[in-house]
Length: 108
Image 1 (cartoon, helix red, strand yellow):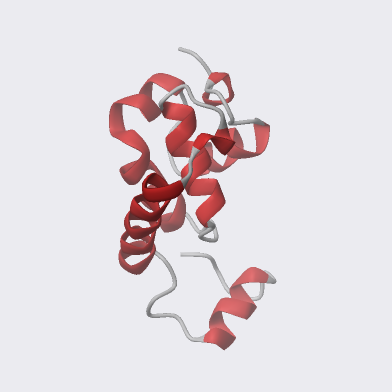
Image 2 (cartoon, rainbow, N blue to C red):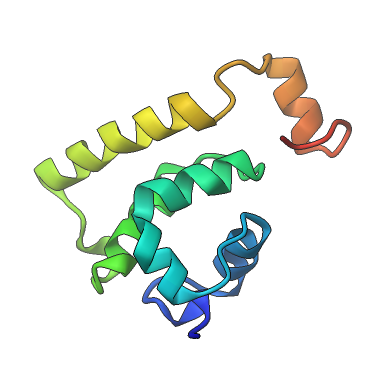
């Protein structure tokens, strides 16, 4: 099995984040796809970040991270927003989000 970091654009930090989300190989990441994988990252407590999402999408397509432009980027933003709404901090207060980010309460 190839490591997650063998996928274009994804380095050691993303490999560790995916491992915390239960995704431990490049093959597993390819099998579930970008949207499900990113949702699992959020469910594991990673903070949502649009650039991280589209870097993942581009990497799974074998494309450089900065290859995303125009209408494609707009469409990816809509997908990201939907994932974030379903799996992000939508129900968390700003105070709890702040406390979570500083390790004062448990990540969900």
